Amino acid sequence: MAGLLSITEPTPTSTLPKGKYFNPEALATEAIEPVNNYSREQVAQLFELPLLDLLSQAQAIHRQHFIANEVQISTLLSIKTGNCPEDCGYCSQSGHHRDKTKLQAEKRLEIDKVIAAAKRAKATGSSRFCMGAAWKHPSAKDMPYVVELIKEVKGLGLETCMTLGMLNPEQAGQLADAGLDYYNHNLDTSRSYYEQVVSTRSYDDRLDTLNNVRDSGINVCSGNIVGMGESRDDRVDWLYELLKMPKAPESIPVNLLVPIAGTPIGDKVLAEGELSVLEWIRTIAVTRICCPTSYVRLSAGRESLSDAEQALAFMAGANSFFYGDKLLTTGNASQANDDRLLRELGLTKQFAAPKAAKLLPVLDAMSGHKSQVALSN
Ligand code: SF4
Image (tube, rainbow, N blue to C red; front, top):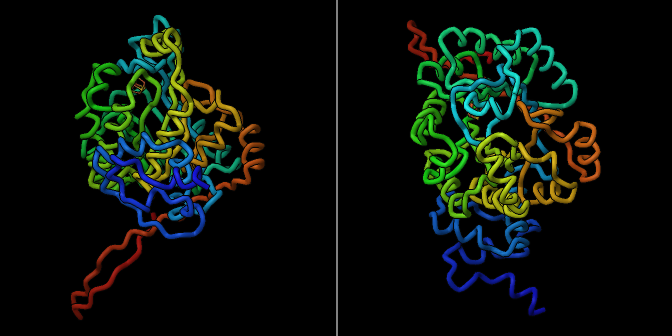
């Protein structure tokens, strides 16, 4: 059994906790304490593990923190499409690339159309409805619109998520007061590769918005895009950036680039070749190990993957994905195909967990008795 033993032992240079992440028995029921304070070096070492070791450890950790074989499903709708003032090099919605991508811009979607889409999403099994707008940031006149959308969609019994660009503290507070559950703002890549991706805003702008979202009490959704020409070191640095936050994002989308002709990064990748899908799966697994209680989401890029590749992504600890035929402007795996795949893999849909009621402290002026009243969300 020398072959088996050889995968149970850490490489001589490893500084990872011995016996914790190299134990093949871990897939069974043995309790593993998650280690959240990984150094950058340890994150890099996880990326270097043999893939099957990495997958088995990621799956073991996943099973400690989530119900095995259950996935959370979200639906994404574009509520304002195209003509974005930012110049993200992968994005068809950027006004900077529209001469080449020819994307048809659309104004804000009417509220009743958004509600109708949310009802359809709920009827087909989504527990969260995500709304995206191609803005640098919402303007003052956009805020009443998005606040109303949050209230209406929540009224249907769905969790809400928005991605609207940068937010200042006041705007984050307004969205929190409206009841927004999640705000998405991806870091996309490492700080050092970021300038290859976008020039109209800085990495620190991105982090400022994430801090504003976190401070407002809204759950943070922040992920990356793998396969933009970045190195593995960049993927390590991206993940380590999340680990340096006071709290890891509750939701982490790990996107696989869909190269779009006419965008600078899309054209480059189409000319030079796409990254191996296994490197994307490896990134999912390391993310699962380092952020054991976060939802790790499969987003863009799923459309082109085989059943087996998607199964490996779930094995790596992904437990959330987008449902529906379209992701903002790129295609997505069809719903009928997703339902078939879920059945074949024996995966079930997670229904929305009721959000804990907000408790308001109350002091009885006569008796001095302190108590709490629950506010409905
Ligand atoms: S990724 Fe978002 S911010 Fe960047 S160009 Fe596209 S819509 Fe605008």
